Length: 65
Image (tube, rainbow, N blue to C red; front, side):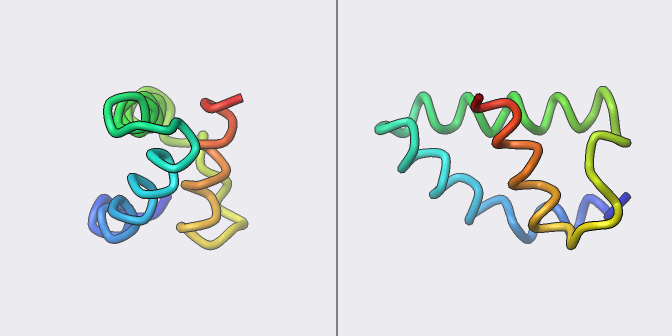
């Protein structure tokens, strides 16, 4: 699993993406929080075969859908 420092690097991009999908800041941020909570509960939910950024966005997409 990537380090929290690595994940933190991509959070601004994930926030922007989530806000664009959700249509507003509050909803987008809620999805990002849900993604991070899922990651804390199950660290193996990130696919370690993928680049950390891709794995994070993939996890977000699972939450979003």
